[in-house]
Every structure is written in structure tokens, then in C-alpha cells.
Length: 290
Length: 312
Image 1 (cartoon, rainbow over the protein chains, first blue to last red):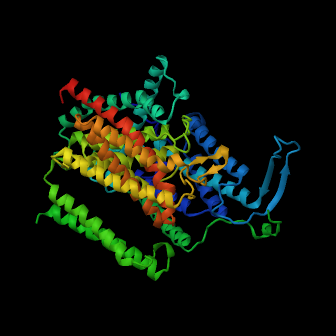
Image 2: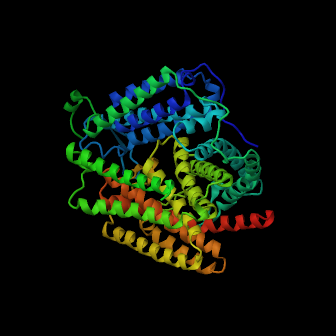
Image 3: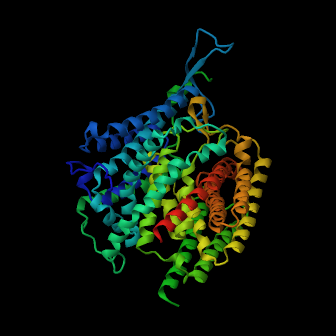
């Protein structure tokens, strides 16, 4: 049995647009975001992402788990980057100190010191905003796209029929296999298998992952016979395909695509000429060097 | 000449023209340093040209082969492979389960999926599994999209599937082993020449490591360890030709696919060649060989049992 993503029809900004137009806009948004490290530009993109999230009509309860996961991930990376100050070393060569915090105790002769510098602070902020923008735009997609339209969306984006249908099936299988994996893991745990306590050297650790990977894979292949039969019975691939749902571009979709592609090309040109790289305010450069 | 062949030729010419145009407009007219060709522009174009001609020749000589056919079965297997690869890479990327890494070698068992699907169901299924699975997996994690690594992962499955094109499995397998040995030896030579290059793929924020620690001996030599494991599988399972061939072809796919991704980072991210090979290629391709040598035989064996049981 297939498990589905939590799609519902909602009053939301995303669902006002054609899914093809939104995918193109999404890819352009990703392209623009990864072109920049300047926190001022990233803040604008962050505002756009936040606006899309707030207007998505998805309740906190529905998205809670996804947000906790992403939140933990983002904070983990930006916080540790900030504390150790080693994440952004390729972006700056000198650091300006805001404050040096020194612990009042020593551990085995080592006194923990935290250098709060302008560069580290701005790097951590850029990182936080950047990853949040990318991740939040991505997790909205399964909640907002009608599974019945996956295939025709990819067809409309230019893929051949068979590959569009394969993309459709991929999107549908992902949550199903995630559930199968969970069931398999529970079953193996009931037999005393513990993934948290893999022991032994590298080779035996790899071998011990087989009880999870192999059953899920083989069950998926064995279970696919029903789907293959159903598709064959409907003469899949005999003639050019027609799709049950149809998509039509409206004026607003064309505007969205033009906007996305235009901004993407513009920011690509900017970033090739070095605009929008890592930035800190001029005024703070007067602070003493580390 | 039929229309399909003409279409393939036109596509290849278009790719070549696109590459020329990018370098000419981007590198020479706009003066973007990253796109400039350096001292031997002819040599680089020659490589691109040879690659495209090779792709065309492989297609032209084998276009009647059933390995290229895409029917209902292949469409469904493509989707299964891509979805499984996406789910496994999401689960084992170190954020969901904290699987330990042994001396900079993180456990990435998902890589056995594109190799197995490529070998069992052909190059087209393999390419889709690797490329789309990697894309969806990255999207699930929220890392964003890296097209060159998706294509590289696709090539892993594609090359693993090319085993289907050869009728004499044993002979082709031995050729593949020799090519693999040469590639692995070259990469290891780079490791000994540039010992201090950081391992760009090893992140451990709680220890203050952001891909900037010098590559460990195990990560650097993992490609040798992996190759020896592949050799062992090849000769221990010499009778079971499917297991041996799946592992050998998977190894070649892994070397070429990830080699492609890492080397394209020289132009895309502006890495020096030593960083691309020692910092990216070795720590990704080497451990993958180890997982492949262990997990792919188990998958091939389990699939053979399924085939016997259902009579397909």
C-alpha cells in the first residue's frame, strides 16, 4: 500500500500558481540563494521564504516535525560555526574582535576562551538565514502539490512521458519506503538488532547494515509486480500518453516564471562579477584585530 | 540514417557547441577567470570531444541491444531505485541516525542501491536511480541541489548497467578490473603527492571540523582497501559470475562517476586539482568501494533468490 504526503487543498500562495510555474520559480530561488553570501541580500530572500511559509496555510501541528528537524540542523551548524569560528575561514582572512570571553576556570591547564568577532557573527547569521531559506522552501513542496498532478507537471516541464511518469512514481514511493524502513527497523529491533550500537571495525559495521537495507530493497522489488501489472493492463507506453489532469498557464504563472528567471540571471551575472560575496559593515572594521 | 540517430548526433554537437560558447563568451569576452581555459585550451576541448565521440560510438554500436529498451518494468524499477536511494541517503547522512564514522570514513551504505539497480536492470534505470535519487535525497535533507554530483551519481548506475552490453561477461569484467586498478593507482599517487590537502567532505561541527582537517591515512588509502575487497569478491565468487560482475562494474562506475563530479568542481567551485582529487574524490569514492564490495553481493544474492522463487 502506498503512503502519501500530507497534501490538502488549501488557500495558499503556492497553490494559486500552476505547479510547473512554482517548480521553475523554486529552482531559480535556490540558484539565487546559493549565489550570495551577503547577509543583506540573504535577508531579502529570507523574507520572501518566510512570506511563502506564512501564507502556505499549513498549520504548525502538521509541519512540526519537519521544522524541528530543520531547526535542529540549522542551529547545530550555525552555532558550532560561531563557537569554533572555523566554518567560514575561506571567506575572511582577518577577524575584528567585539569581545573576548575568558572562562574563570581552567581544565587541565587549558582556559576556554570564546572570541566573539564581527566576521564569525556575520558568517553565522548568513549561514542561518541561507539554510533556513533553502530548507523552508523545500519542505513546503510535498504539502502543497497535488500527488495526482506530479506526472503531468514533470511532463509539462519537458520530460518525455515515460520519465515524467517515473518521476511521479518516485515522489509517491519516497514516503512509502520511509514507512517500510521504519517497520523493518522495528521488526529487527524486536529480534535484538541495535543500529545505535554498531560494534566492530569498519567492515563489520557495514555488513551489519544489511539487515536493514536488503529487506526493504527486495520487498520493494517484489511488491512492484502489482504496479507493473496494473500499468501493463492499461497499455502503458503503447501510444503517446494522455493525462487525466490538465494544466494551463495563467497570466500570473507567466509573471512568476519571468520574475524567477529574470532575478536568477541577474544574480548570476552579479555573482560572477563578485557582487554579493561575504560582507561586514565598514564601521565595524575599526575594531581591533584578533 | 534514421531520425533517431540524427537526433543523437545533433544533441552531441549541441553539447559541444554549448561548451565552446561558454568558454568563449564567459572566459574570453567577459574575462571570468573560472571559465578560462588556461594554457592548453586545445587539450581540454579534445577531451570533451573524445568523451562525446565515445558516448556516440557506444550508442551507435549497441543501439540494437535490449539494455537500452525502456518498458513498463524499467519505468517502475527506475522509480523504486530513485526512491530507495533518496530514502537511504536521507536516513544515513548522519543527521537522522548518528552512525559513527571511523577515522573520517562515514558510513554511506546507500551507494549500493544505484550500483545494484544499474547492474540488475540496465544503464537507463541505473542512471535515473543515481541522478534522481541523489537529487531527491539532497532535497529531503535540505542541502540544496548540486547538479554535478547528481550526474556523477547517475554515472555510477549507468556504468554499472553497461555490463549488460557485453555478452562475454568474464572477459569484459577483467578489462574493467584493469581500468579500475589504473584509476585507483593514479588517485592514490595523488594522495601521496599531496598529503596535506584537507578532507573537504568530513564535517564534525562538535569537534570544530568543517572539511578542513588534513585527510586521514584511512580515508586516503580507502580506495586501495576498497579495490582489494573488490578483487577478493571477484576471485572468491568467481563461479557466481553475477556477484563478481556486479561488484566490478559497480567499482568502475563509482570511480568514473565520482571522478567526473570531483573534477568538474575544478571549474564549478574553482578548486585546485589536488583538492578536487585528494579532498573530494578519495574520501567519497574510496569508502563507497568498501560498501559496494560488501553490500552489493548481498543484494545480488537476495535478488537471485527472489527470481528463483517467483520464476521471473
